[in-house]
Image (tube, rainbow, N blue to C red; front, side, top):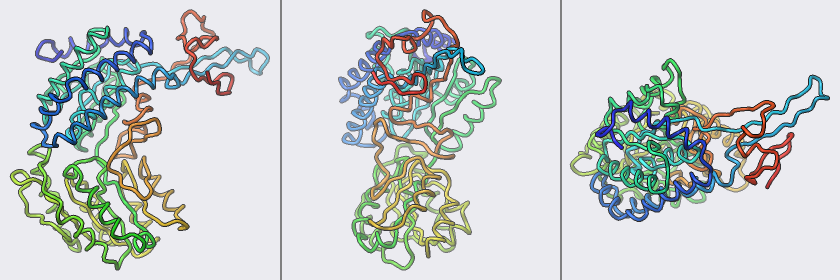
Length: 483
């Protein structure tokens, strides 16, 4: 379904009815729906990759891998809901002898209702029409209306056709999934009373505008936005002395990956003062090719961001050129360098995200100065630490844990594993919530807790029945009970 056939109010009305049916469906049924979508996308992968490459210039290899990630996500959520702990089922039996007497209480997480999902530009599959937001919402029993991204509209429409047909063939209710497009429709979608939560991946200005709409409604709703991230990297003196060439190569590969359009690109790299590391990074970056960017607007903005950095006194261009036409020629890598003191002096200019293949090397004099400048870094999705065995890094780890949702050791942040332990989120502006948008617990965004007091078993979800017929993990009278 699209707005070409139904109005937005008709779509949200159908989504409301479908959400009721889906919430009452079994986990096994919903898992079968997700698996059917995954199978259909895999079966049509070649066609979808061809369309995606024509619209995004990301290349067939990268896009083929992204289709596999997308279908893997769908199958992961099928496993999540059949395993059962996502329900967080809790049973506390009545205790009439306590003071005061305790009733029988049984608590579970229930689906929140129809969800709006806004596609991302930089992941046309994994964070788009059938991506993680859609998959996690469908998994727990919500209906989904996706707002297509204008940067890959044809792909969105074809993907939506495949998803809708797969759901229909698998027996899912009509109205469970729909696609809309256009900025005005997207704004109206967030404000529609039927929508109970929003998932968004995009720019800070666009996301903040929608966040404000979602929270200023007569009935405010959760807005799960991923907006922007600098993803700081800290390199200690000992690490630089031990493996400077390897660190330079790793950084060059990470910040240029996908033309620097990954949300986890390392944009700030804190290094000890007085080393030749900048020259090593320049050497490792010089042969990285210029690459086409996702949209002409993104390509136009990249040189503007470069010029903004270069205009600050005390910021040096280590390699590359700020004078480039990323629209015509692709985005070429640029490495900047400056000092922690300069960042503390001009944070409003130097602690801004520049979407594209560029990074900023920031020299710090000592751990005290490093701690001071890190305190100014906005919330990020990731923070990375390169240190040597035996170094006292506890204070650094604590500080990095405060500013990011995922802390990496001796690695690089680009590349996000889709599994049970993943946390893809962080303090604002990285995200607008505490929850992850990747991995098993992404479902928690689209659930709300309900407790039932002294309820007859006939009205309870099977997960709360005394016999635990689903055989799922539960907490009973304070103790975890495994099936």
